[in-house]
Amino acid sequence: MAIHVSATTGCNLGCTYCYENPSREMQENWVEREYDIEAIMDKLKDWKVEYPHIQPGMHGGEPLLVRDEDLERIFRWICKNYNGNGGHIQTNATMLTEQHIKMFKRYNVSVGVSCDGPGELNKHRVAHSGDSDVTELMSERTLDNIERLVESDVSVGVITVLHEGNAGTDEKVERLLNWMDFLTENGVGGHFNPALPYEDVQTDISLSGDRLFEVYKQVWEWIKEEDYRSWNPFADYVDNLLGNQLGNCVNNKCDPFNAGSAKIIKGNGETTACGKTWAAAGDGGPFLQGPSSDNEYNSDEERYDALKNTPGPYTEDAPDMGGCKGCKYWNVCRGGCPGGGQRDDYRNRVEWCPAIYGTYEMLEEEIRNVFPNIRLITDYPWNLPLGDIAMQGQLDIKPFAAMRPAGTGDRSAWDKYELDDDEKLVNVLPDGLRNELEGEELRFLLEEEYDPDLLTIEDDGGWHADNATRRSRLKARGEDPNKPQRTSRDTTKQQGSMGYDGDSHSSWHKIDEKFREEKASDADEVNLDDDFVTDVDDGTEEATSD
Image 1 (cartoon, rainbow, N blue to C red):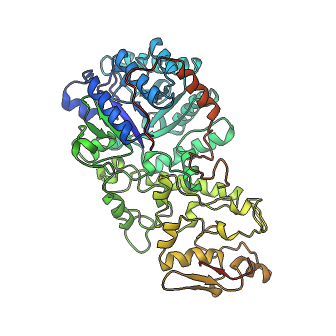
Image 2: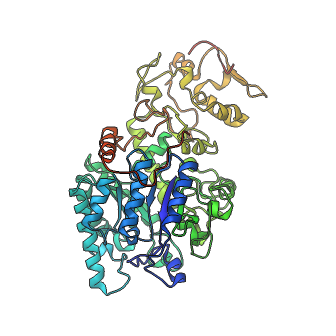
Image 3: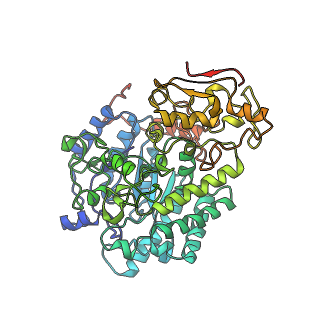
């Protein structure tokens, strides 16, 4: 979840695939620079009270169209009111000046740069006015300014939109990867956003789901070659499979009429949400969402209820009708971004379903090849609401329980193991969810741990397994105690950096608290008194469920 200040949707570029283009066309003012800074500040203060732990940042359009004095005022306020962190900014970096870089360092601002690669790979990020020479000049400025930010020790990442221009062929992807190698070797990470398929962009620019999967496979092989390489969505996908907080809004629920993943303050102080919803659920303009429309963000889950119950490609004995019913990756995908719904309909699952499913399947196979005894979110029934719990950061499925040396029984990544009661599939679930499990869901989970012949489930949800666990029985019979219970499922988070204890965790991203503290300390030395707002507090024995 994020808060963005979009003082203007104006931009000095005219990217051919930009989902905000319809808004600019309707306003007939492409490089709009008008906004009300006082209204923006008032809304920031209101939302500091309502959302005390969500740090705002600057988006657009192009946020560097905002006057420098107003940009500094916003960052100074964020830095003062959010523990020395000045938020973030997403920019094409073509207008970046030395004054901006000093500002970012002064207020500890993280910078995201939008760039699709060098040279011709960036051809769809065209200059709004001028010929191809101007576009080429703009691209060179972006590339140069990424290097300037790195050399100035500013935290920087890159968003790369994938389209036919930079990923339509394997040769283009190789050129893209060569550039990404330079970035990652210098500490710059990033993530991919597939070009949204709307209007004629679907056939002319946007990649198909199958082509996107081929690109992801090529990138994944590249990542594995060097330990300094990392690029999303791969890190997010691994964390999602482990049950960590769901990375990236496209894996979470999003009400296309009140999209809470990106709450946006407009230039006049009114509120809207992610621009990808403007065309998906409206006419392309930034329609009012959230408080300005007298609604709560993410108040409607109608899309997800429909997707969960509508047949899709992994539904047994039913035609594909655009849904997700029966998909084992439902909890880590939820149908994808509504802005990319199939057939230009937000109610359908996303166009890139083959790439998302295929990538999750590829990563799951690799993880299980290394750790056969690992537990992943796909070891649970697909329709358990685990994604909702993970989204809140309150899920710990203990993926490395079988390997955790603190356990009382045998532990191994590959060989036989025994779990303590508090590590079993059912018992690691939050109490509320465990108590709501229905008969078949409960039986499915229990039979993964206990001998089904000895298992009794009562009508009221109580259960007991007499004499021995399933694994102990198999061991006593001389059989493999880790033999899968069902042929339709594969075999099944080490506490610490990948276990849940209330903070953010990741299997991949470094959590560098020392770096954050140093940056916050630097910000404390700056005069930040203006617009201050006070922070707001905000075994062999009988097993039984009793």
